[in-house]
Structure formats: C-alpha cells, structure tokens
Image (tube, rainbow, N blue to C red; front, top):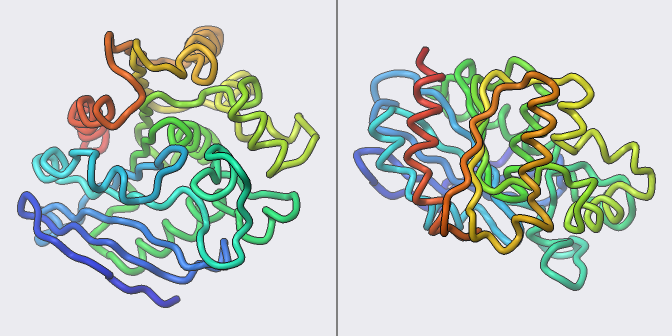
Length: 280
C-alpha cells in the first residue's frame, strides 16, 4: 500500500502529519491527518480517532479543531480521516448532504455508490490496520473515538458495533437516529436502498435499543444549533440510554451552534475525559 506524508509541521512539541495512500476499500486515493504528541518520541501513545461531519474533509478539524495542545498535554495521538472517497469517476449528486463529503460511514450497496462509497470498511478495518502497521508508536490497545455531526453518528455506530475496541466514545452534535431524520433518510435510501431494516445497523439509537452498549459515553450539543430539533434529536439518544441502562453524559451548551467554534470550545474537555479513561 503506497503511503506518502504530504505535509509535516511541528506543533506543541509533536508532529502534525497529512498522509495520502491508495485505498483498497474505496478504490480511490484517501487522505488523513495524524498528530503524534511529543510523548510518541519516547514510547507508545493512546489513539483518539475523530470522524468529521457533512461537507468536511480531514482538513476541517485539523485546521480548526484546536486539539493539539490538549493532545500534547495528555500524550494522545489524534487521527482524522476524510468523510468520503474522492477523485475522478467517484459518484456525486446535487446537494451538500449526499455524495462527496457525505459518505455517512456506511458501505453503500446501491449503484452508483457501491463502487467507491465503502467508508465503513475504510474506517473500521483498512485505516486502523494501516496506521498500526506504519506508526508503531500508536497503542492500538488504548483507543477512543469521537466525531462531529455525521461523524458523531459514525463514532457512535462504529463503537457500538466493535465492542472492546474503544475505551471511551464521545460526540459533538451527533446525528443519533439517522433512520428517523431527513439527513439520514436521504443518505441511507441512496446508499443502502429501500430496506429500512438494513438501515438500523447504522443507527445508534436502534443499536442501543437492540442491546449493544458502550463503556463510556459523552455527548455535547449546542443549544443554538439550527439542526438540533430536526436532525440531531439528542433526546432520542437520552431516552434510549435511560431505557437500556446505558450511562451517558449529555450536555446542552447554551448559545453554541453547529460550527467548529462549538467543537473547538469543548474539544479540550472531551480530550481530557478520554485521557482519563485511556490511561486508567
């Protein structure tokens, strides 16, 4: 597998990398960013994976997430993949909530999406294996996962379906019940077809209702998020967790919206929370 570091910068004593490689899962080139804290120069470090939201690439959180100071302080590596396959011939559609930038972290089964939109396999199998092999200072036995919006959906479902892989899970403004909201219904009908039962494997609320559990869960949403009531519906996650006995720390942050102003504000708190669980 061809891997190329396309940029490297020093930050807070660590190394911020941007890496490209040819993906077998998506049959396209893919790009991810990886921050290695200064502690990685001396030994192995825990890994936090961050999944981004609609319209984003790896660059959004890399440029605006303000995670490096905290990662350097706590000795955490931070991995941020792209949200969808890209390149010549990759299917796209009108609108920002389907196609490029909107992979929804599923393996598409419907044409034309099925040729490249295999983000589930990419983020759950190919990318972890690649970084484990290429960056031996990453402690793959001490992992956490987080994400924003569509990426919050991805973080929740990836963790729920991979019990034991992650010690902690958090999310910023996640789409918690995509089978019940317009963003998810649009994406899943395109990518996964009309069988709504098949969609439930990628719905955090449905997975919790079916009996899956998380070791530790922290969710924050902005009280002024314009998508809060129509697309995010955090009360559905809160209700499902209460019924299932799944512990959750849910914060509604007054006055904050859906942007990276919100994400970056609470990123240090989330990383401190993950660090406590990764090093215990």
